[in-house]
Image (cartoon, rainbow, N blue to C red; front, side, top):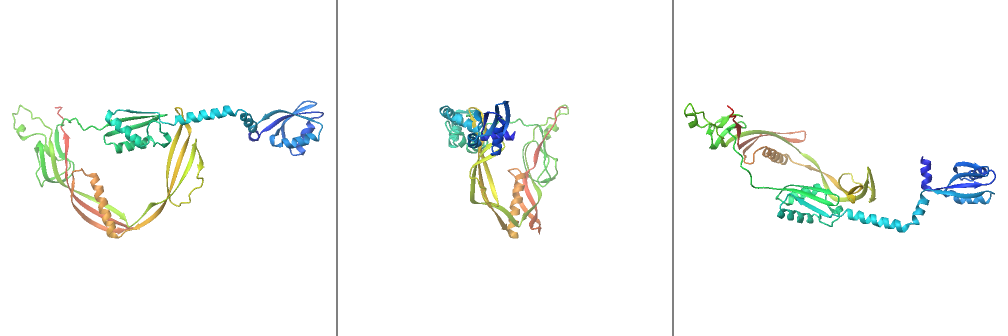
Length: 401
């Protein structure tokens, strides 16, 4: 199979030899270095075989030294195909121009649809998209991916709660949801307020319900802080069953947290030094075909950024795409810290981690270092925090009985 493919690429000729004992002519060709194949004898005075196009000049010299007549029956292979196409240049050029025009038009944005937004926000979105380069008549190659467009819109337009960008051929479809400031009041659920964690009561702000604790009381998790039953309801007639209400309020308590944190005295990190190389590829199936900047940069440490642009023909996505690959050179920097500097960073890190766990209205009132040591090249701290926070949480009451 490989033999036939190789000969097809180079081209070969089917020849007919006429004369007495025509097979002798192919023997002469073999002696003079002209290989032949598929040789068959038609009759006693004619035989057919195939030779390479590159051996045609040798064949003519042998023919002059013999008494045989040579007839060319068939020309096969890529060189003859190219010659035949060359005689139809106007048609081929016309097809190529038509394909190029359709290809270019297929990669232009012709429509942008926006749904789910009122007219004011819709116009704002369209203006913002123009700043990103997305407008009617723009080339799709110069436009960011839908995921990046979504992220930019949410960052630049605060009125948007959510936006989806979908690309369909030469059209972009945007669907958005606006933020609303009108919230439907939730119906309060009947129940007690209980302690979410252990602590010492500092203050109470109760709008509904019966307080069961006072400042300086020690409470444990799940203790009832504010009852859903009022005292006057409990004193009503025995025939009337007391009805619980939805206890509301805040119970501020001192809560203690223990934290352990470690910071290395030596840190290695990568820094970009401004050197970069950009490579360009055509991506076909699983193959990357470079067409600009073929050399790989001699970077020991680097970061790579890849951007891919798809091509379309009419509404169909072609199996070929353009990839831009930027390779940034980086350097490994080593930073050594003194013990006090590492301790300061450890305190800041521990405080940040604690604040992530606390409610927004919580307040850290005291910070103590219980233990400090240097071990395995790290500063390790054991910390103790005192926090003022609202520990009340709702415990629903079943009213089935």
